Length: 152
Image (tube, rainbow, N blue to C red):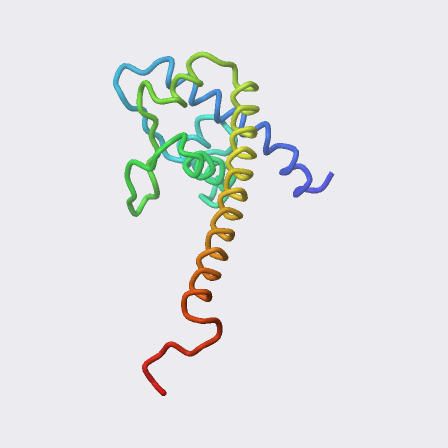
C-alpha cells in the first residue's frame, strides 16, 4: 500500500480519534467552554510527535474546519500560531459528544454534511428560479427588449 493510500484509509481512524479526544474533553470539562488547537489535537491523539512539521496535521485541521463549516464548533481566536477552536457547553454538538459514542457521532456528521449539501443545492435552485422570475417580470414591465436607458 502506498503512502497516499495509507493516508486515505487512516483518515476515518483519525477522525474517530479526534472525536474521542473531544468527547473526553467535554466529559471532563469544568467550565462553559473547551478550547483546542489542531497541533495540540494531533499531538494528544499521538499521530505525530511535537517535533514533526505542522503541515503533517493537515487532516486534523481539515476536519476541524469541516466542523466549523457545519456550525458544530467555533473559531475562538486567530493568532500567528494558528486558530483556536472551541465548543460551548449546552450547544447541540456538546450534547451529542456527551451522550453518544464516536462512531455514531461520525455518522451524524456525515449525515449532517449530506443534508446541508442537499439543502444548499435546493436553496441554490430556489434562488435561480426566483432570479428567473424577477428577470421575466422586469422584461414584461419594460416592454420586452426596449432599451430603457436615458440615451436615445
